[in-house]
Length: 103
Image (cartoon, rainbow, N blue to C red; front, side, top):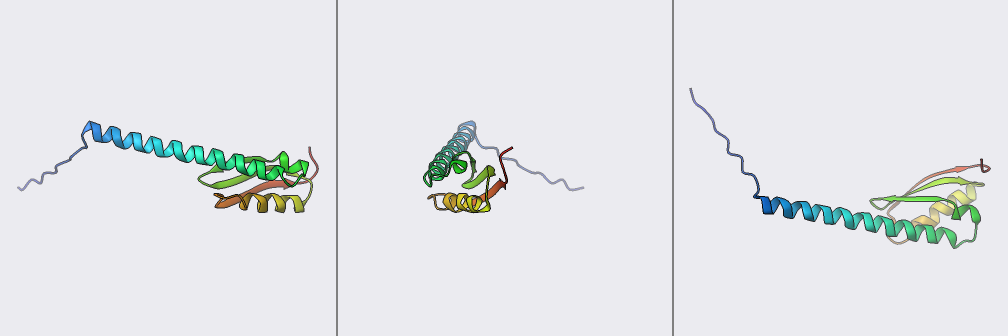
């Protein structure tokens, strides 16, 4: 009967720690970039001067801008989406805005 053997080589502890630190630093960098992008989108939504646009909740995840809230018209919903897409760094916009009177 023939036995096969497998050898498992694990990275030394310093290399594993280095990889973990790099991954953590990359995650922190992406999170800060998303936060800064959300702030820029929020400021851009204030520029047109429409009060409902100032009340939109903006979330960013991996450069995907998510708009949530309620606006009184489809025009403002489209304006919010167009404004968000015009902000440098925004790759996509998910427009979850509802159209209707405030509840």
